[in-house]
Structures are given as structure tokens and as C-alpha cells.
Image 1: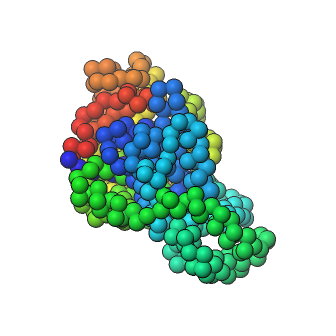
Image 2: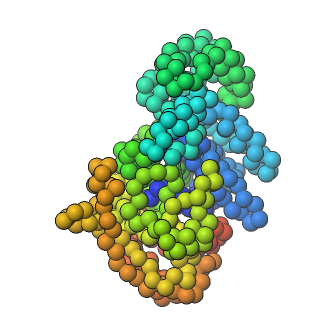
Image 3: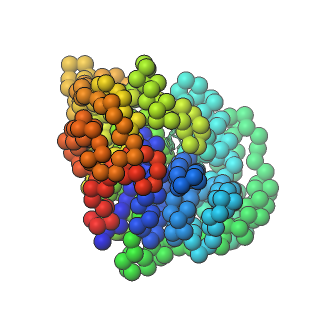
Length: 429
Ligand code: IMP
């Protein structure tokens, strides 16, 4: 029996929520290991829709859940989300949720900075979710973050805030932002401490016990590989590592505990925010993908940019994470297209590339080389076995497998939890 790490193999929004929800059924513990409440995972269970940003998806099914130290945590957003799912009948108690006591906090000053920088950058903006994610990670690696454990120690908290404000004071003056009242910040944090601290404990220890007991752990990645701070379309990325290697570091387990790496791949491509997107469509096909796929951001409500499947990017993403297999989602969105294009390489001047180059100008300049595949008129929605799919749809999937050099182990055919074709159970390794 293996553990499973789920990672996005495109620019996020690959449909991880549904796959993670489905896998949570089989897991005993679900762990978030990076990102923060910039993530948006939509879970559809019967007639209920849950929208999670920070909580691991397992909470909806009453599974034990862990927010690891690789996550940046806005404590106000955490408490709001707990209250929100509580109102939907999901009780998130300290027995159910562990919050790593060494996780760094997102504070209102991080959100201020995120917003002010984006506003100042004009056309050069990243298109962030505005949640303060980047500035919070900067303070973490700058060794001046306030961490969860500081909430239990008013003296340490005061020292942390003083150090943090010395840094932010200078930044804020440069951006014409008002000074932060350190006393008020400390008071606010100490006020919410009694609500947050019952969840706080050493996550690594909780997970060590789970690993030793052989409990099935699901590591739930957020965002996607092309948004990874090292491997993505830098600087148009998020500020964390989103690849499978981060599951170990951000949870506090050894790399072997990560187990089966499952890449989540959408049958076409989308991205929100700015940055290069070689197969982006600006025509009727793009509009149709967006409409049929309901491509609006869960967190910000922004319309997602849409394009054809890019096998170059996905192959690269799966290689970087050492993915063992893929969950392919939203195939049904392609129903009714006469022809489908798949990007198999890039042209850059006289060169033909089989990977995305690292340079910013090169990333913006690559031109996709397409292969044309036959579409299908029939519906694939709700298919639960290969026999339910038209031959051209099966052919499309098989060709993608060849191009991305990984097998499809799960095929998701609608937003409904049970509409999947299972080829191989990732928990079986
Ligand atoms: P940030 O993570 O808010 O700093 O945003 C940086 C970039 O990542 C922007 O392009 C966002 O649109 C993108 N991003 C962040 N979180 C997600 C997500 O969960 N899905 C898709 N894109 C995301």
C-alpha cells in the first residue's frame, strides 16, 4: 500500500479538487504541504458544493487533515473557512485538523504589500490572487516571519513583530502605505490565538506516527508545476515549490513516504493571471473551452485563459515530479469539437524545442507545433468505463499518454464524485 501525492501538472485549476476528494475516500490522512489560501478546490458531493482554500480536502469526509509547515497560513482566513464549512455541517475540530506549529503566518500587512506591488507594477504585474502569499513567503525565507507557535508566547510574538515591522516600515514608506500599528497587530493576534492554538502541534510527529502505523496518507498539492517558483514560468509564478519533492519538505516526512506521484492533467490548458501561454486561443475555440469548462477562478472569480493541450509542458512537469501516472480531467469539455490540436513541440526561431526554455523572452516567443487529432460528436460526460467513450476520445487519451510519457490511471468524466474510470488505484502503488 502506497501513499499518494497529487500535484498539478499545468498552471493549476486542473481539477485537483475532485480527484483529491475521490482519493480522500481511500485515504486516512490528508496533508497540504505548500501554498496557502490562494488555492481554490471545489468539491461537488451530491447536491452540495464545498469551496476550500486552505483546509485539506479530506475534512469534508471527516478524514484527519494536516496543514504542514510548507503552507503559509492566514489565521483569519483559516477560522473563516472552518466556520464556513461548519455552517455546511462539516465540524472541523482539533481532533480532525492539525496545524503545523512551525508554519509561517500571512498577516494583513502581507496582503497590503501584495496589492500595492501589483498596483504599482501596472502592465508588469503578476496577476496574483492578492492573498499576500508572495510577501509571506519572502518573510519566511527572510527569517522574520511570525509563526503559529509564536501565538502561544506573547514575549516572542512581540519580538517577532518588532523585527518584522522594522522591515515592512521601510517598504511601506516606499509604497505610500500607512504605518502598521504593532501594538494593535499584537493584540489582534493574541485575541485569535485561543481559537488557533488548539489545532497547533508538531505536524511531523503526527505524520511520523501515521507513517509508522502504515496509514494511507494523501499529500494534496495546490497550484501547478508551471506556477512553481523554480520550475514554472518565472516570474509569473506563485512563491512556493508546487512539485512532488515539496510534499516531503512541506509536510515533514522523508521522501520515501511520499509514495505514488499522481499528476493531475486537464484535457486542454488554462491559466489565470499573467505570463506566457504558448497554446492560448483567442478565437471561438478558446471561448468555447472557457464556456463549456466553466473556466472561472474559484478564489478570485477571474476568467481563465484557455488553449489547446500542451504535451511539451505536461511531459516536462511530470518528469520534474517523477510522476508515476496521471489523472486526466475534463475530457467531456472537448465533446463536440470537430478537430483537436495538441502541441508536440515548440519552434523558437530556427530551432525546434522539445521543452520549455527557462528564459523569459524565449518563453514568450516559442510557437507551438501542433498535431491535429480527430474530435468526437458523442458525449463522454459521466462515462464510467472505456466502453462508454467514443473511439476517437479513447484515441485522444492514448495519444496524450504517448506524448506525455505517462499512463492515465484515472479518467474523470464529470464534476460528480463517482464519474471516473479507474485504470489503476494509486494507493495500490
Ligand atoms: P499568488 O500565488 O497569489 O502569488 O499568485 C501568483 C500566480 O499564481 C498568479 O498567476 C495566480 O493567478 C496563480 N495562482 C495562485 N494560486 C492559484 C491556484 O490555486 N490556481 C491557479 N492559479 C493560481
